[in-house]
Image (cartoon, helix red, strand yellow):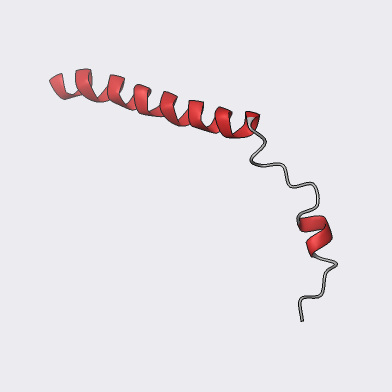
Length: 46
């Protein structure tokens, strides 16, 4: 039972770090690909 006192806060901290990293990537437009897949399907790379 004493292990839960350590594991629960550690998991919440790691989850918060992951969430903060995801929000940072969304706000810095790393997922925006305006000319990406829609135009890439039309290109012929032969």
